[in-house]
Length: 472
Image (cartoon, rainbow, N blue to C red; front, side, top):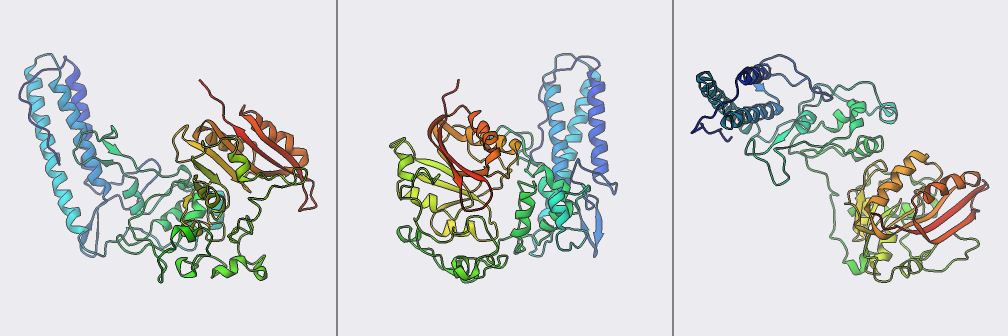
């Protein structure tokens, strides 16, 4: 811990300000007293029942957030010292006050060093466990899907994660321009407290639970981003080295390179066999795991098909399409075809009942594990193309569609392409959705509306390639 230096010269504050400074210091001292006692204290959303000192099996257990709180007090005292140093009026009383403030700062430093030594010694063993006060049963589907009124978290590890993380040099800004890092967690996590607690219940520096399915349900329900964890992810026990890129794009991945525990299918042949249709555990993109180029490179009849070929789209911007995003239920086939044309595509998808992300990666492509409610992790005006198929459907409300489209607009560069591939909805709702696309004021380069004939319902397909305009 860096100690505030004793001032070499004294410049003084205007009369009356010492009272305010005294109140600030007294408040800091009171806070330190509360933190070091057995008095319960709460946080805004993340209330921990392990926030007080306790004794378990003869060993003192203290929350890691206590050290962060002490560091925050050190920072506050440092600010007061700087204010004293920069003041202009003279007062004998202020001289005494400054000396007392330096003494308080030194005491805080000693307290923080003692806590640091305690944490270093207590975490040196290999059996450190995330402190959770209750056992968690299987996740409550109603809580995940609908939320819960409770906002009480019992996981000590969750509180450790969300606590402010000050820089090593207290009061000094890092290269990001901040004095501390505030870890991120989704707002709606507070409505799913028991399942977030369960997700954060593990042994530190040991193997993580095999619970990605719970994590994905939380993400889909709005608990996104999830908190980070301090445990090691499990790996397939017989993982074999991946194929070279010149053969991995169109080769079936080895079964041993996928963990099948949370899927209905337990091998790759189940994902593509005609005998398992309806039993695979997924329905969106039902032919995704058939790693074939069929349907992408053959021109289609404009009167019956809403599909455009990749070459047809790339000819609209020869040499300009280099990087982009595919937001679809996919195993990476669109990205593989674009890679063969020297275009790099990130494929954003979830594991919707099957190993979508694993297969994308095993093909040598970039998977982006992202929920529909998340802001895209790209900077403004950076991508050449955004493509989406079998995702934008008539199930979407207009509010959600507007936020999604405007986020895609944000990441597209000027003159970039938005490729909407086979959006479908009921025919009498088509105009409502098309109006939303028109409100982007994009230039229509390709546009096609055809009947959807694979079902008896009165539905239509809509596809378009749109160009983002320049804006000032």
